[in-house]
Length: 184
Ligand SMILES: [Zn+2]
Ligand SMILES: [Zn+2]
Image 1 (tube, rainbow, N blue to C red):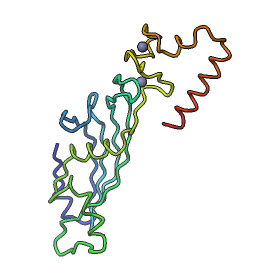
Image 2 (cartoon, rainbow, N blue to C red; image 1 turned 90 degrees about the vertical axis):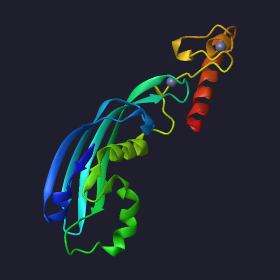
Image 3 (cartoon, helix red, strand yellow; image 1 turned 135 degrees about the vertical axis):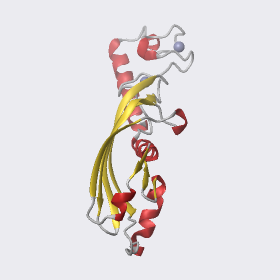
């Protein structure tokens, strides 16, 4: 959605708050479950518009180990600055460079909330999502999801441990866990 704050943008000292719910389309590159809850608080300081707020959304992520999808809550706090449209007020030249890259979502008194939400969720989504910390992943041979139980092909950790003592298996498992920990 586009939020029109052009009146606020012209009026030094003006403040406004909005609580909105924002959907994202599939081509945003993110899969949102339901809508994102967005709080937006604008303050026109004269030279800039300060935007503070928060975004809370449930994303559908794909586990980097087992490739199953799972929901995860992603929270992001917002703090952005946009150039105001106060007549006669020059844009503060020393901060122009800082303002520039973050202004894609804002232009001429209009804030693209969809783009703002997309940017923030993209920044805050985990790089290597895990459905759970101890996800067992997939069997490298048959591709079975080992969280659902040992696979039938014989390459799974349960199967390879058969025949050895339980202590040896425990030691092996510990070793594997340590290795996983270092990797991820
Ligand atoms: Zn997983
Ligand atoms: Zn297998």
